[in-house]
Amino acid sequence: MLSKDGSLRKIEIELVETSGPVSPAYHYTLRIRLYSEGNAIWLDYTEIRKKSAISVQFVTQIEFFDFEKLLKKLRRLDFVKSNSSADFVGNSKEKVGISFNWLTLFVEPDIDLRVDYLLSAIERNDFGNYSKAVNIMKKLVASRPEIPLAQE
Image 1 (spheres, rainbow, N blue to C red):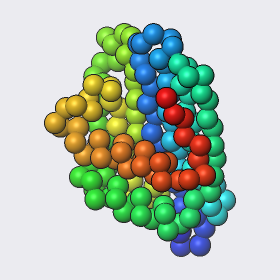
Image 2: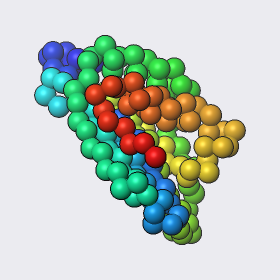
Image 3: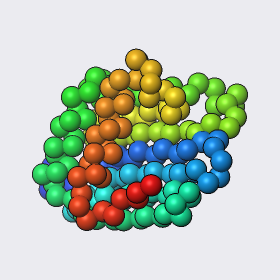
Image 4: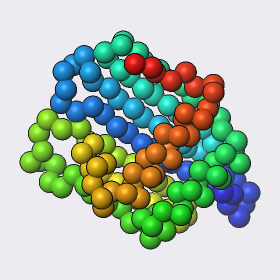
């Protein structure tokens, strides 16, 4: 995680999911972002659920050890090993009334990828490893007792 000069490498891992075309009462947005700033790694969590009028935003520093465990899990996935981006959306200009979701991973110097997907892609067999990455990010947040998670 450290550069040759001892500084923290640039890190940016982000998961964004939205509800798409549902009744406004059921709209939601979920954003989980890990990033390096200074000599620390930060977790920025945002969840908005309109039905229950819940809006949570929380930023906390995470330990290098916790980040290393997460990164080790992600590095085991085939698409991360091969540094391969993926698009499960297709031509977005033809898609109307859907939720666009994404997972980006950037860890200097060897990982730089993006996965774009629709919520319906989660059920597809060929989405397996990507689904694991999404779940790794969600479990990271769920494992943090200091983050007040939105409850429906």
